[in-house]
Image (cartoon, rainbow, N blue to C red):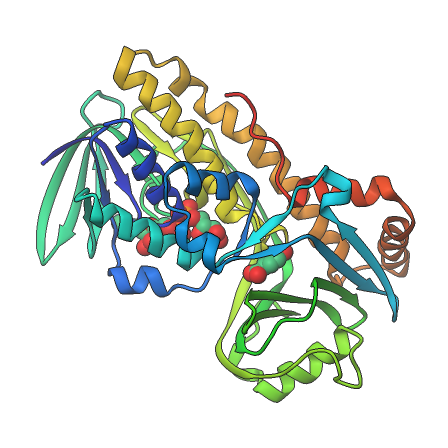
Length: 393
Ligand code: APR
Ligand code: PHB
């Protein structure tokens, strides 16, 4: 089998790329290790920057999103036993907002459209190896239905996430990796309960908490826990009681509890691999970088990467010029590092650090107090939260 572009992974990066290439008449195949049901059921983030919403609209895939999404115009940050920083996006960013729509809903819409187009997407097709990356006819080896297959390509897009095979296929000595693991994790739940008014973060003496949402009837809440915490240690009651405490909702009059139907612990880390390319292999999304979940940027950064890659691949297949492809990694990494910086900043601002000295704790609280009284400080958060402008690649 041959394809101009072999895409490894049917997450947001691989699926957005497939649709962008399909629109340009570029022949691509998506190879996904898991089943369609598995991929569509994975619980992930849910905050879309305007650029990501615009991409769905550009692809003509935003009908359900428009119907079912929620619009968030602000966030609140609670600290100091009663203080609150309110960051109002439209006032600070000339009208910009963020859209709440689960990543798994984005994935469902992208997969359904790809199948409706009759485009090639192979599920339960696990890529086992890549060859010839430094030539002009790289090949992908994959297993499907108990049989080994080979796909020859002109280009391979490694959109297979942090635990994929694309990044490890790059020879030793080529990549520089940057890894920062925070000393805590996030215990997240989904519950059948209406969310509170605002997307609300808390820096409490007990630790970080976040009250988010997926719809007017489904809440997404998080608590900071130990990095190696087992979700089984947290009964529903224990979770709710701690969330009320950290959110300064001691009389339990604000946060409405409900049936918890998903519970899990997520690590909090930042990771970047550079360059995001080796020969005819191009990395995009989590395959190349992980951002701390605090910034809610993972999906949005994946979409930004593949916008750049799709433009470069279109130039390549139309003109045979590698110029944009040669600039791909530098272009993406400029945005990646700014998003890593912002996500690191929000993580450092909002969490309790076990090894913080009293001095460091007071500096952290002073930063929150500064934001409480500084429009400039709140503007910095707002312009990053709604999404930095896409640079002209
Ligand atoms: N062969 C085929 N598919 C693979 C392989 C493999 N060897 N290894 C991984 N995959 C698939 C995974 O099953 C997954 O569906 O690649 C896909 C990668 O998708 P994501 O991990 O969602 O990564 P990405 O598309 O970059 O999206 C980043 O997803 O993980 C979240 O928080 C992250 O929001 C961010 C977004
Ligand atoms: C989420 O809803 O998963 C979410 C929201 C805001 C964040 C992080 C995660 O900053």
